[in-house]
Length: 488
Ligand SMILES: Nc1nc2c(ncn2[C@@H]2O[C@H](COP(=O)(O)OP(=O)(O)OP(=O)(O)O)[C@@H](O)[C@H]2O)c(=O)[nH]1
Ligand SMILES: [Mg+2]
Image 1 (cartoon, protein in one colour):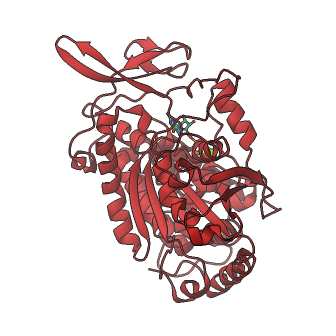
Image 2 (cartoon, rainbow, N blue to C red):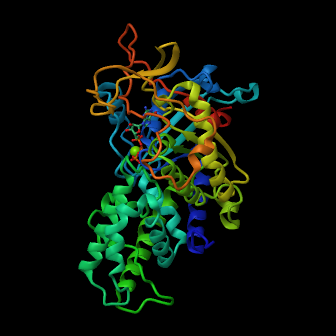
């Protein structure tokens, strides 16, 4: 396994963290990593977390809040001026006033939330009130797919891309790119137009894999799907090549050009992102949208597992490497959260949790998370549904009630986005093993759950017209695990 960062990178990460440490003495801060593939629910989670803390939401399992020790929580200037601010107010306006979900994140942003609290111990209370600053970064989930590339050469990247493209679930959508790639001689003279065509064809294939019907996750390079400010940049105009021969690239060849761009992408795009935002985390929540993968079938679940395993291996909590182990902050708590649990009845939550635990188990074992506490929870940062029961004949069915998004369908019915509907989402199977059969085509067999997307909930208002905080499922448990000890 090649090392993920060069020695120079390690040194720079170390310096950054020494500086962080030094300032950390004056104002204790926790850098919370909210990690997750695209559409996993990062932006919604961050918005709901802040909203619930700022508005004193109902968080019975978050001890500091439940016992009334949190005096106040408020947004402050973030520490990194170069990073745009997380548009918290806009996201809340979307969720609460318009009842729409925030748009997909296109660039990185940051937020600092400061919590003032009374210490739980008599000793702690002798000093002034405690303050804890929580720094949170939001970014497009696709970019996470790039981290595993840091350790891969262009040949490895090319070989793996071809192996993935040949899997049964991808074979059809990848055919145009595979045919084009097969026709290219990597040793022929570099050709810009051909590079462009290869890039276009490869990105189109990645985009098709991401659509709902396939819902695949392992789709690097991440900037191909979400270019951010690199849109149209030559740094992005590369693609994996087929027919690579042993040995080095011939100067001036197609392969030499692609390899150079691939390496430039790693140096100028991936590594700065990793160094500035990912390598300095204290705590981490990994959001996993297992529901979408389950809905799309076995290959999507297997692919999600593959992506998670590769990505989690890039986080080096505990004693990952000697140098960073000595001076870097290390992630000591990792919460793996199955998001969007409000799509199923609570009777199935344990099963969802079991599926995600199974997904993560292998990832954690391979990533060697020794030294960090890892927990798994089924949660919903924003609860868009409530529960009820319906009867069918003599059967009592547990249903969920909410307003499906406009355009969602079940069978013949198409929803208008306004009407409330009771839906029987189906049961998750008792044993998670059912989802880990790798080679089942997505169309074969019935999906176990019927997944519809709901609008964000209508919030109650108090008599004074104040909106209450966003409802959730187990956000409090997540907070307790991630921050409880910091507010003791
Ligand atoms: N019902 C429900 N839906 C959710 C929840 N969290 C996220 N979603 C849905 O998932 C979608 C994606 O959520 P985001 O928070 O935007 O996901 P993200 O991880 O920020 O995605 P990118 O910005 O694309 O990386 C939303 O548009 C909602 O449809 C939740 O707690 N409950
Ligand atoms: Mg987002």
